[in-house]
Image (tube, rainbow, N blue to C red; front, side, top):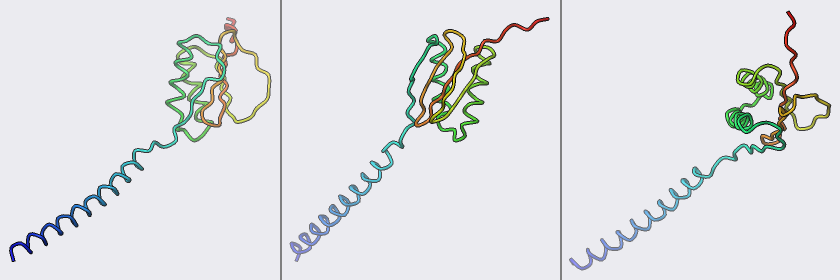
Length: 131
């Protein structure tokens, strides 16, 4: 009778192990799904006619505001931070498609993409105030 009990115990152990294995597989699948990264915003510099420090600053801004939903808020934040750091006259245009002509200071023009939006950043000439 002791032998039968041992066999029964072993079969229960294997059933428990099988259940644990199934449970482990389910947990692994859950972890894999949780670990799958959400599609990250793609930030790409399309054209740059600025110094390295300005470009790095703009790339940091893009990273900072990439999840902002309203393009008007992105534009406002970019403009405010660029003017605070590099002086007045910055312009920011955001959209998927746009046409136009702009005049900008030499070495102050950048185009970047954040997902499907193109962001055009340029600094206009600001003449000194006449007293």
